[in-house]
Every structure is written in structure tokens, then in C-alpha cells.
Length: 313
Image (cartoon, rainbow, N blue to C red; front, top):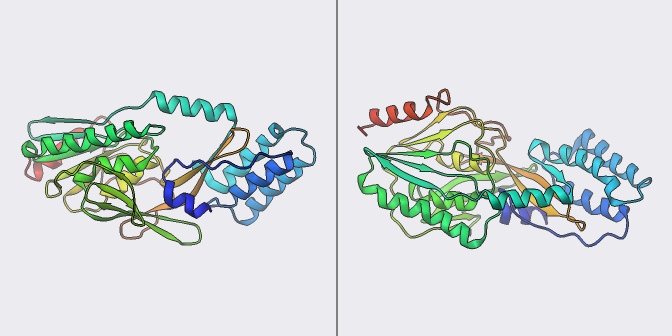
């Protein structure tokens, strides 16, 4: 079940509703069954964390008394990118995600077009379509007057990677872009197919049918706040011809999460795979280094200077 959820919703997004527990024991059983799918759910630390949850059950008179040991068990099973959120925290996060919805921006100045890709999390289908179209049509409209591109991923802390990739699909070649790798070595391919992004051949987001512009130099900007699905987009550009990355090392959350909702509304955000690049190199969830390191205040200028060296005056 966990692999299926990962394949469909990797990057952040699936909801899995457990059956309603009749006791803290049932609740713990449901939670531990989910956590067993975590990327790091093995070894002595995991055995100890699981035992701590089970020991707490014997004394618990309410589900809420299990939150503390489950917070620790989630950290052990999924690592730093995972969390156990109480019902109140889960609702607060959903509301905040909905409030900060932001469209991409495409602006052109003297031949250089900047494509800013913000994070996108809890968005409606209509908002996702608007998000993808804003970038894809913007790229298409700017292509005739563009000699160099800047894809700005600075501050993109993640969310739903599929519309992000669809948004920049005109700048990405068809074929494998990256992959997910589970702890037992299973790999799932993320690919670009025209305006669509697909996982193992299943289309998860699709943009408008616009032409590819992949023969023009592209500078990708990153910083310490480029995280999670933002790092997935960054990885999709890495090592392509005519592409260079600039800035600081990314946040180091280059891993895929699934979100599980328990019966009381609490949520487990669980890392079940790490990212690999198109050549199969596993990131192991560590920060992604730029091709050209630069201080935050100089990143844009250094990138534009490189574009100039590549023939974009």
C-alpha cells in the first residue's frame, strides 16, 4: 500500500484515512503500520521507538496520550523531512497552505527572461491549472525575445512537485527527469512527456501544448530555502546541456513524502523515498550543491553574467 501511495502522490499530497479506532491500542496499531513504511524504519532505533509507543499504550487512557511517543517514532521512521501533526496542527498547516497560494511570474528584460516558480501545496484543481498555465504560456510568449532564461527556485520550500514540473516543462527535454528510490532499492521514474509530467508512465499534471525551448542557456537559482519539491524541480534541470545552477546549497529535503490522516484528524507526513537524478545517482536526502556557488546578494548577477558568456548580451 505504501509504495502505491508513493507512486501516485510522491512529493507531498496523499491522504489515507484509517478506520476509526476503538481504543488507544487500535490507534497505535494503525499509526505503527503506517510508520513501518518510512525510509528509515529499520534497525535498533526504530525497534526502540516502536517499543516505546507500545509501552505507552498500556498506560494510555486516551489517544492524545500517544502523541508524544508517535512524534518521536515518526522522526525515527522518516527522518527530518517527516512529522506527526496533531489534529490542530494539521488543520493549521492546511489553512496556511491555502492562504499562501501564489502564481509563477515570467518577466523579460533585455533578452533575459526570469521564470519564478513559487511553492504550491494545498491548491484546488482550478488553481493548479492556473499555476501551470501562468508559467507555460509566459515562457511561450517570451521565447521569441529571449536569449537566456533564469529559473528562480529561491525560497521554494516545496509542496506539490507535479504542477511545478508541468509549469517549466517547455524548458525541459522529453524523457526521464529524476526518480524516487525506496529504502529497498525500488526505483520509480519521473519523466517529462511534452507538457505532461508522469510517474512510471502515469500523467499526474499537464500543461498547455506549447513548443519546447531547450536550446537556449538556462540559469537555475537556488538557495538554502529551496526544499523538498523545489529540490525535485532543481534536480530535473541538473546536468542538462546549456544549464547551470547558481547560489547556495539547497535545504537538504530531497525526499518524497506521503501524508496519512488518522481517524482523529492527526496526520503523519512520512518520507518513503529519496530523490535520484536522471542518471540514477541517489541524493540520500542531502543538500544539492550548485554548479556555481555565490552569495545570496550576488546570485542573480552571477547567473546573468554566465548567460552573457553564453551569448546572451
